[in-house]
Amino acid sequence: METSKTVLKKQNSNRSFLAIFQKTALICILFLSITQAKAQSGNQTLKINPSLGVLKQIDAGVLTIGYAEAGPANGAPVILLHGWPYDIHSYQEVVPVLVSKGYRVITPYVRGFGTTRFLSEGTFRNGQQTALASDVIALMDALKIQKAVIGGFDWGARTAVVMAALWPERVKGLVSVSGYIAVNLEANEKPLPPTAEYGWWYQYYFATERGKTGYTQNKYEFNKLIWKLASPIWNFDTATYDQTAQSFNNPDHAAIVIHNYRWRLSLEKGESQYDGLEKRIAARPAITVPTVTIGSDFDGANADGKSYAAKFTGKYDHKILKGIGHNVPQEDPAAFAAAIIEVDGFGK
Image (cartoon, rainbow, N blue to C red; front, side):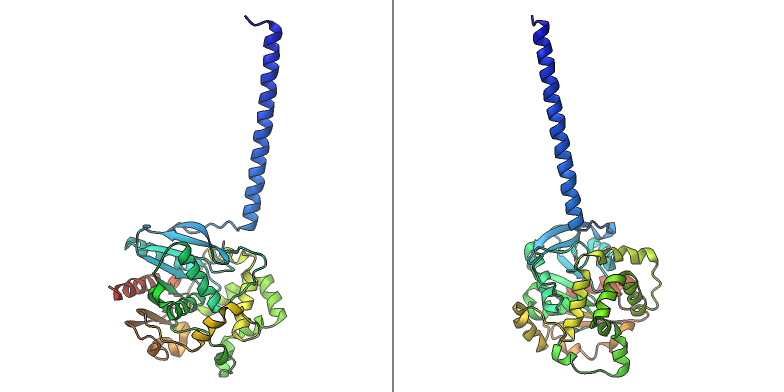
């Protein structure tokens, strides 16, 4: 039988062990909390509409790309690309329609939006078209997707067109709002009629340092104005806009937007590794993959698609949506989803 001194020593030893254990556990909890706080401060935490699926993150090329994924993992892949000043929520009513048809739907944040981040602080914040297209190719490689239907509007349509022109083997079908909108820098140096120039007022604003500072400071109000101007009939509410506006808090957002528009006017250079791709797309090659283009009120006289129809030499269809502005997938999700399904059927 143990003596009272022995019991006392063991009790003291147990207390010491318990105290050490508690301190160690507390340190671990504090460390994990600090680590999580740092991660959240470096990688914006966003709430997305559940209809888009699950928000994920993957390293791809020079980025860690944030993307929503919905639908069966073995479903035919569809990648939906947003523009500026929009985000993945433009597709929140398109995705459920496609998922109901068995598609695997990937909706990524463009560089400078949402949870997409550059892997290195030293990487140039480049907004040129072939950089954005290369991002999507890198995403497909990272996700081991060899070929997908690609759909987009605004910047997203341009990215999709560049992909279809330069990497047709990766594009099963194309849906492009406003048609063949790849940038040609030489053509962009030529002035347009005054009424057309008026429509691009924000590009000229961005060309100034005042514009750069103004956009950085006022992006919430600025982008809301663009929404109203680009879709004058669409009666969106504050909650709808705010759902997207959280994506503009990305630390690289202003830099990417400003560079994109300055690059288009040859006011800033792109990166040399994209020179070869830019030279190829500047030649305006025909797009051979199955395509559906969409014209809306935003496109004015070009809504009928006649000015670019000849650029699409594969199986082709064009839709005209009246009473719809620039944000086609959010304003008329049924029509956009139908276009995706239609173009996928072209290849069967």
